[in-house]
Image (cartoon, rainbow, N blue to C red; front, side):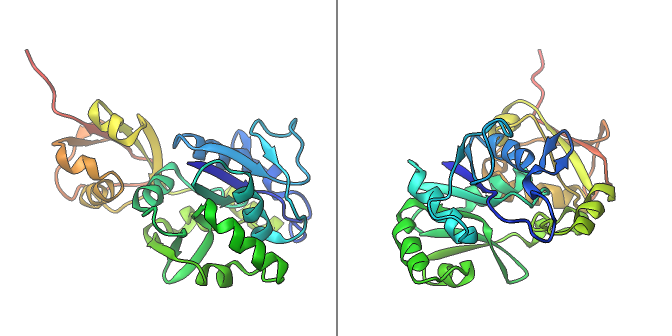
Length: 267
């Protein structure tokens, strides 16, 4: 599976390139690319105005410039050698490894596309697109049909409810369009918890540590883990919250460190 980050917009409301805005220790586009890479997804940037010195990930050009996200997706699908391709925007910095693994695990490959929904709202720029859709995208571009919502409705699309990831400041669908938007995300405190996984649990998650949006308690956490990583259902494990073994319904707070502990082998 490949991942393509669309960074070819004009950023007219922001007044500067959104993907090149600082976010943590990276630019916004590089932050999203790094999150994709952690999911073992090969990453490309779709942009006509980036140069290879500005970002460490390979860049492809829009085949037909100035056609918005539809043109960017078309360029990605023509370029890719992979049947299945994650498509993201460069201005959604709250996207997490956890949310990406959720949609890729839920994706049924027989669909043309798979996009996230949140409270019945469709998010075409958090989705997976089959390479075979390139021909239909080309037809839409020739007919000046550039609205992704309309294009998707004509395809065999799988909709994945991801409303649980739309938590206030941690809303993975929040995109940054204006200087005011950017200032708010830079000054707001993200409500996240840190997950540490050990042994077979790290193998299942394909990561030993990651951040995820705040959940209410350990029961909610377990439900979320089972949904995101179904193989964890077959493992008996304990949960510690801030280095103390938790019981059922232990409350979880912003900044807590959660450890997933497999059975200890004794001798």
